[in-house]
Length: 172
Image (cartoon, rainbow, N blue to C red):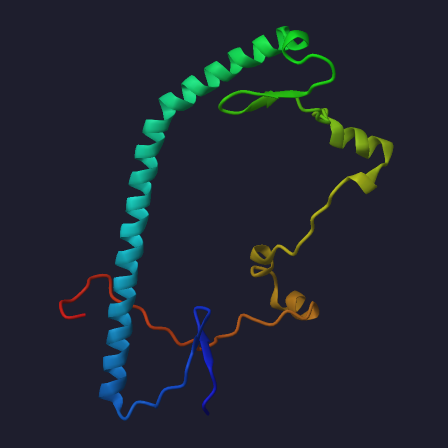
């Protein structure tokens, strides 16, 4: 059977079968070694990203603080002097570095007891209900009850796996 198989989302082209057990075990060991290499690369990348993120946040924090403080001052001034800064029906203006202004937004203010009010009025069409079977609880239920629901299981299923040992050996 020369079918194209998928593993981890990648299409794998057919290859000749192993001639013997030694070839098979050698291939399994190679897969394990490659898995460990992948883990090392990904782990190092994640560590590098975390370091870069922490360093950039540290560098950005004072810049962000200055920016936010200045933006609050700009907003207060613009609100106080809006008529002078934006004559007529103007909503925005530009500077050498950017644009500023006021945008008309629709703001909704939801009361904290909105759900209770909707239920009291019987307006359930505005209430979302998400239901799903509690499979954790069902796994503990009586097998006769589960059979009546058409639930089969648990069943043993052989699934092929290759799992590397935690340590990496030289030459792999």
